[in-house]
Image 1 (cartoon, rainbow, N blue to C red):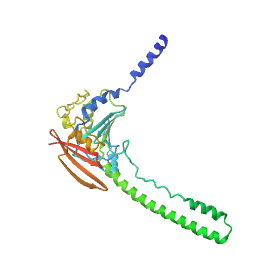
Image 2: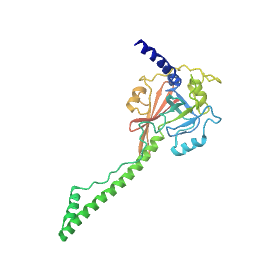
Image 3: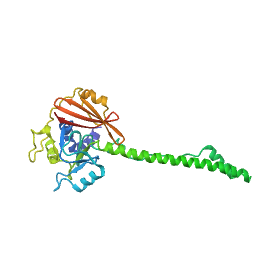
Image 4: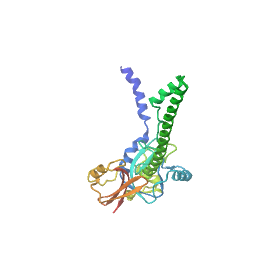
Length: 304
């Protein structure tokens, strides 16, 4: 047993030493950014692909790719909007900086506009008639059976035609719902590093990478110095009345447990969807929430 321990110990030490160092900064970045409001300085595409930012490149954004995504998906967050940072994820070569839900197309989002419509099956009578026609030798009797079989086939074809028309209408309605949901699901920045996320990268480094595209009102007293990579300490958060943060996908009842009853509500139609906009007050903040069928799809926080 001791000899086995001696053999395994170096392997374990190598495994620990080779563990990805980039993951060490994620908890600090999440504590610092998530649940805080930022102000967007450019329109953001309505997709989970978001905007790719390459801090090490001569041009940090490929504006041809950025324009293509805007044209393909529309604008989810507009220049000047104040939105919540909902998630920060650190991977080997990128940092996902998600805003107002992170963009449409994430796990759980229904991105397909197709509606399956099965063909109308043959009835038992139609199957029986096909067999009887095949085996019938009497000419008059066979013609009678064939007429009945034709009637059943025509009836089935008409049913298929009605079902296909209903399917086309359902697909168009679903496309409208997807387009509307897409515009209310936020977006994100993908901060990409060709050589991997720098070791020990802190909140100042993230803010420096996104400074041209976002304002960080909650961090105005800690502007990053050039070359500063010190990990930031979390800033204090305003507690909600119910003690919890809000997020995309919460029900109206869950939001009210955190924020209390809304100060005002309004209703509008977007395509086939009915959107309820509710406004809440928390301390010196005004929180505007959009609901579809009682589910939170978008929210923004601003100062009074």
